[in-house]
Amino acid sequence: MAERHQCQLPRRRHRCHHRVAIILCSVNFPMLLTGFLITGISVGVGVPASWTYISESSETGNRGRNIGISQMAWGIGPTIILILGTLLAPPTGGAGSEGVLFGFVKSVGSLFGATGAGLNVFSSRLVFTSLFIVAFIAWLLQRRLEESREWVNSQTEASKDAQVQPSSGKSLFASFGDLFTNRINIRTMLFLAGMYLTWNLVSSVMGFFQQHIYETAGGLSNEHANLLSVGQWLIIIATTFVFSMIVDKVNQRWLYFTGVSFAVLAWLLIITIGVNSIAGLLTFTLLWGLQAGVSVQSFYALWASELFPARYRAAAQGVMFFVVRGLSAVWGLVFVHIYGESGEGFTIAAYLMLALLLISLIIGTAGAPETRGKSLEEITRERYNQ
Image (cartoon, rainbow, N blue to C red):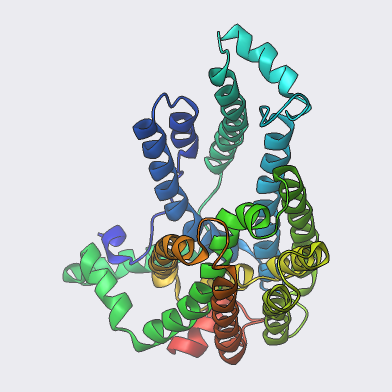
């Protein structure tokens, strides 16, 4: 009864390693697509619950720091995979174009009978093997985690209410109805989704197409595009560390403004100087790395876990995450059409990116909440009179 009373995603131990194993063992496109789809669903379920757990398990003075550290860890992962993929890369041209560790791929691949094109695919399997190992270890560690005190208290209160009024047990759909009929919830979701969506439309394009943009519109080689991406991720990790150390100590409104301003300057610069300039690309990479360290992603993860009561917290994040990521995927298809095959539409796309970032800058700066130094209970009482 108590479980149905809560409009909150359950904190299940997600077995992401099973999903990665499907990709690792794929022998055709349907199997590969299935693996990616299931992995995406698993991430969509796990990320909001993870942010919620981190926030609820943190002390008042280090909530932002812990969220920032989680974002830094998120940045370390792609960096390692980019480096590993570069080292194990199969040859793309003549002799010497392969990664320095491709000889290791040949040695291991020969044990499994991989030759020719199969050997090239085997290098990707080794990369996904590393992901499988990490996911498996993370799953083992998750099994040892206890639920947060606030979530347990929320469940206990719901159980007491159900015992006093057995008819108060609500179905899942009725609980989500409560989420969407509360005006404070709606205003909060519009604010968070607005600032996050406009930024994420740009960020998702960079995540999917940055190297392609560097190669087509920027004229870089694949190797140089990869090196710039690795360098950018190193900047992101360093900047996120700085963010983690200061976010609980400074005015978050102006910190947000500073971070998104780096993003606006990055796209403004690439429009004015031009994407074909190596100096422009290097500066753009630096500025985009700085903004990603003090990013809307970090503030969204922090504020979305602060601004809702425990009974709504994970569910509200899940709804917003679904909407934002879903629209970002659709936007990726639109961007490809605008950008063109060889980057002929880059200027138009860049102006759109700049406009989206300006909207995110305005929404986030104007609506930044005053939550620093307050417990989650204090924030809930101030906002919901509870």
